Length: 218
Image (cartoon, rainbow, N blue to C red; front, side):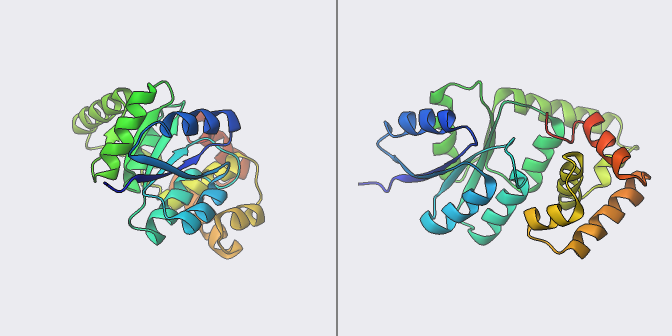
């Protein structure tokens, strides 16, 4: 018998976790090895259960999902992450691509599409919702048409974007450090880089920039 695909479901809504678990358990080639309600819980569950696929919501309280996903894939190369979100933002898609996620699905997808995505990514492929693929195509066209200019936000690293999103939540440097498992000194350095790259030298203005540019969660 072919080994089943081990899946970890990560979403802060218990109803969503329950519905996905019930649907995926109908597939003979899949096994739900655990669920988590936060990104930090997801990291712990991966250590415990070694899933092949982590199906992870993007908008959750606590640690930013992209940071957690990067930590998961760095520590567990055999585990792949598929993001699941009700939102489609170019920056979210860019971050998913930067950390080499296996896929990005919108929550309006049918259960059959989610099943197909899990199988595709588990086999080593990638899977993106049609709306996400369209954004990728349009983004490539726009970049080709305007390759001479680079927005200030495009100069930010993944870590800097994560810190900026936490700033937009109103978190202190100490809180950000604890959430990201970094030293306060490292967070302070990221903040300094943000201010220099964006030419913004005030935390409130940084938060406003993040909200205006769609970097902060909806």
